[in-house]
Amino acid sequence: MAAVRPIRPEEIDDFAGVGNSDPARVQEVKRYVEKMIAVGSMRPEWCFVIEEANRLRGRVAFWTLPKLDKPLDLVLLDIPWDSEDSLSLGKELLQTALEALRGMGVKEVGHVLDTPPLAPQWQTFPTERRELLREMGFRLERETCRFEWKPGIADIPVPAGLSFRSLAEVGNEVFIEAVMRVSEGTLDRRILHDSERLGARGQALELFQDLQQLVYDPHWWQLAYNQDDECIGLVMPAKSPAFATIGYIGVMPEQRGRGYIHQLLGRGTDILLKAGVTPIRADTDVHNEPMANAFRRAGYIQFATRSEYGRNIHIEIPR
Ligand SMILES: CC(C)(COP(=O)(O)OP(=O)(O)OC[C@H]1O[C@@H](n2cnc3c(N)ncnc32)[C@H](O)[C@@H]1OP(=O)(O)O)[C@@H](O)C(=O)NCCC(=O)NCCS
Image (cartoon, rainbow, N blue to C red):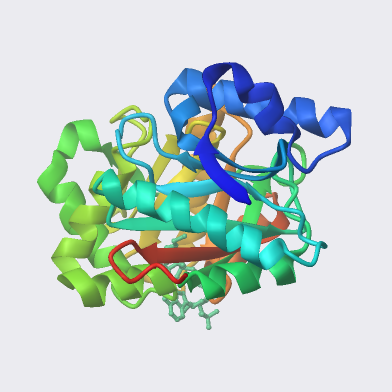
C-alpha cells in the first residue's frame, strides 16, 4: 500500500534524492529546495512524497512567488516513470496534492514541462509526464520558446530617437492603459485567452498586478516615446526568485513593423545588466515569431521549449 504525505523539515535530503541515483543531481535539487525555502517560494510542508514499503517512490512540491502565500505551481514532480505502476503512483500522488491545494483555497495550479530536460528538475520521460497530466485533468495552455541572454553575442541596441518615462514618473493608471494597448493583436495565446476571459482592461490589470509580485524597481518599468511624443511601447524588466526576466514588452499596434521592439528589448536588457541582475531568461509563445526574432537578434539564445499546463482545482479529481 502506498501512502502520500508531506515531508518533515529534516527530510529535505531524502526528498531531493527521490528517484535520483546521481549524487551531483541530488545535491542540485537539494540546493534548489533550500534556496526556494529561504526566499519563501517553497515550504517543507508543501513537499509531498509517496511512500511504499518504507521506500520513497515519488515526490512533488508546491511553488509560489515569495510575495504570495498560496501555491501557484507544482514542481519537482517525479515518479519511477519507466516502471509498470508509474501511472497509478503518479495519480495517487497528484490526487493528494490537488486535494491539499483545494483545502488551501487555491483555484488554479500550473505545471511546466521543459524539453530538453533542464537542471534542477531534469524532466526526463516527457511522454509519460504528459500522459499523467492529461489523466489528471491538466490542460496544455501555452507553449513557449525559452531564451537566455548571453553576453558577447550581439551588441545591445541603444535606442535612437526615443525618450523614456518610468512607472515612477507616469503612475499606475497611464502604465496600465499602455499595457492594455500593446496587448491588442498579440500573437501570445495566454494574453489572448486572458483578454477573452477578463476583457482588455481586466487582462492588463491582472498582468500588471502579476508582474508586481516579482522584484522590480519602478524606474525599470518604462514607456517609450518617439520624437512626436507618441507612446510607441513599453518594457517591464523584473527579477523572479531564480533569474532576471523581461516581464512584459510590447509595441503599440499602430507602431508595429518599424523594428521598435529591438530598441525596447535593448533598453530592458540594459536596465537588468546595469542593475547587476543576471542571468536574464525570457519566454515567448511559439507563435510569437516577431518577438522570438527580436530575442535572437539581441543575443538571446533559445535553450528550451516549455509546455505550460494548468488545472482548475474545482473540477473533479480523477480516481
Ligand atoms: C511582438 C511585438 C513586440 C513585435 O513588435 P514590432 O516592433 O512590430 O516588431 P518588428 O518591427 O520586428 O516586426 C516584424 C514583423 O512582424 C510583424 N508583426 C509584428 N507584430 C505583429 C503582430 N502582433 N501580429 C502580426 N504581425 C506582427 C510586423 O508587422 C513586421 O512585419 P513586416 O516584416 O512584414 O513589416 C509586437 O507584436 C507586440 O507588441 N505584440 C503584443 C505584445 C506581445 O506579444 N509582447 C510579447 C510578449 S512576450
